[in-house]
Image 1: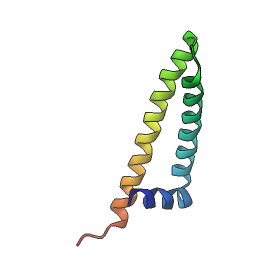
Image 2 (image 1 turned 30 degrees about the horizontal axis):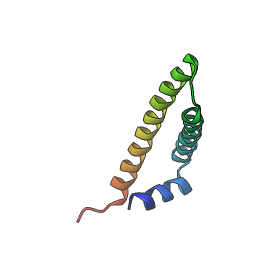
Image 3 (image 1 turned 45 degrees about the vertical axis):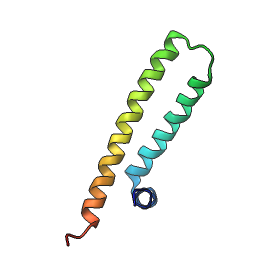
Image 4 (image 1 turned 90 degrees about the vertical axis):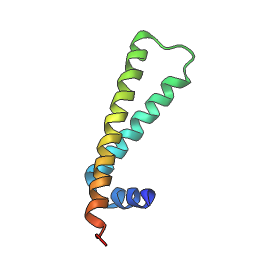
Length: 76
């Protein structure tokens, strides 16, 4: 059900789509940093910053998902 909600939101919700794209960009950058054998001090700081940003974005996406589910589920 979560995947179908995400798919619907990606197709119809501009803010959710923007957050998902930004999250994916940060995932790619984090992957690039992790692939390096050694990180500079600046890269280590960037890694921490990116992880925090990704968590914030994921939280925002989950809030949108929860609101969507609440507004589309009928009380039995």
